Every structure is written in C-alpha cells, then in structure tokens.
Image 1 (tube, rainbow, N blue to C red):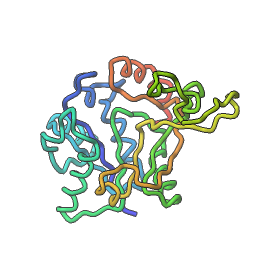
Image 2 (image 1 turned 30 degrees about the vertical axis):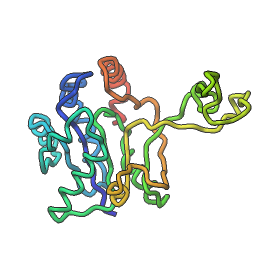
Image 3 (image 1 turned 45 degrees about the horizontal axis):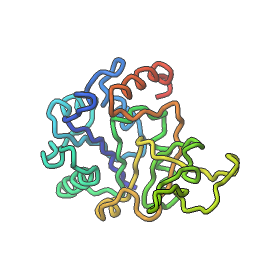
Image 4 (image 1 turned 135 degrees about the horizontal axis):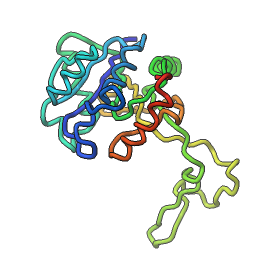
Length: 233
C-alpha cells in the first residue's frame, strides 16, 4: 500500500508565535515529527505542506520534501485541515504520483514512541478500515455516560441519552479521545471530504507522550516532558 505522509505547518501561529520552528529542547518543534516520519518503514513518501518559506527551509534541513508552497487561502485561521490535505493529494496526482492512503502528522503533537507510525499503519491495513486515529482513554469522570447536558427545559440529562446513570466506575464502557498524533485515511475518503469514513479504527497511545501545543502553557508541558521521554522517541 502506498501511503503519503503529510506534515502540516502553517506560519501564522498566535498562541505560540513561530511555534513550528521554535526550539523545543535542542530541536525545532517541526523536527520531532520529521524524524518520526522519516524513521517509518511504511510511509512511501513524506512531504511538508506550509505557506511559509522559512518553515519550508527548516523542513528541508531535516530531509523533508517541500514540493509546493501552500496557497494563502489554505493558510488562514479558518482553513480546514481536510482542505489542506486534499490540496496536497491533488497537487501530487497532477504530478503523476498516486497514493492509497494519507497519514497526517501534526507538529503540534510532537512526541511519538519509536515505531508508533508503522504500528498504526499495520493496524489500519489489518482492520481494513477507512481510517485510523491515535487515541487516549477518557478519564472516567469525563466518560460520556457521566457527562450531562442541558435539555430544552434547562434541566440536565445524561449526554448519551441514557435514562439512568451508571453507578459504578468499573461498569463504565471504554471511551477514548483523539490525541492528535496520527490520522491515517484512505485517499478515496479524503477526496469525499472526511478524515474518518464509515469504518474507523484506532490505536491507543501512551499518555506519557501526549501533548498538543496550542498555548504557552502547552509548550511548558512539552518542555517538562521531553527529558523523560527523549530516549523513547
């Protein structure tokens, strides 16, 4: 299976200015995702999609291909990730390169255990899924069966629609949230405008690696985690 790895990194970052090339430890943030992608044995090709020539130059230093500079319309705060990925797929197909699936890798989730990308790809293929996402368990206090939402009368109801609350934590069904580390999707599903399709698989990550950098507080968390997990990246 031919799988395209796409690293997305736009220049306009407000929460942490210049975060994609800001030094996290000894490396630019972008470099952690670049190194994980290039270590994969199952990604056919890895490219960067960016609107910023400076980010493109840094990516090239870490041996990531930058076949184009992203159009400005796809670099705004309102530009969707699916549109960015569709643009990359379309551009490469116009160059005669075709892929069965896309693996989206976001630099803002920089930490992935060694071999995690290939493990995700293998599970995606084995499950015959439309897509796969990396996940982490939802803490039990936030399990959807214990979450309430207001109804039209201004009273609370269980978010899942259950009539009775599950009383014991041990009886709660498993629940997961997307950790942002990996999205793998069939190209045909991407073209339809979805990252998930109708058959969605998952791979559970380890919480030690979880950080999603949007704010300076997130950056500080990543800085604190790095010495503890550096040897496992």
